[in-house]
Length: 134
Image: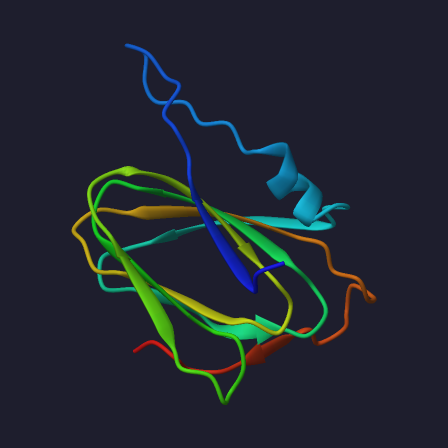
C-alpha cells in the first residue's frame, strides 16, 4: 500500500448540484471510523503540518479554487507536492506516520471532511507537529 493515495471523484450530480460518492475501498481504509471532523480553509490558510503515530486518515476535500497538498513519508525523504485547480472533490488516504499539509492558494473556501481510525485510547497524543508547508 502506498503511503498516500489520491483519488479524484467523478461528479454524479445533476441540475440540483454536484454529488460525489466515496469509494468503499477508501471507507475500508479507515474502518472502523472512530473520529470525524469537518473544517474549512480560507484563502491563504494552511492546515495539517503533522503526522499521526497510529491512525490512518481519510480526507475528503471539496474545492472550488486552487490549493496545494504536500506530504513526506519520513524525515529523510523529499517533500512531495501536488497542485490542484478548478473545482472538484478529492479523496486522500493517508497512512500513519506520513506528514501531510494542505494550503488554500485560491480565492474560495476549501471544505475538508476528515475521518480516522484511531487505534489507541481516545486521549493518546497521536498527532505530532512537523512543518513541511509554509
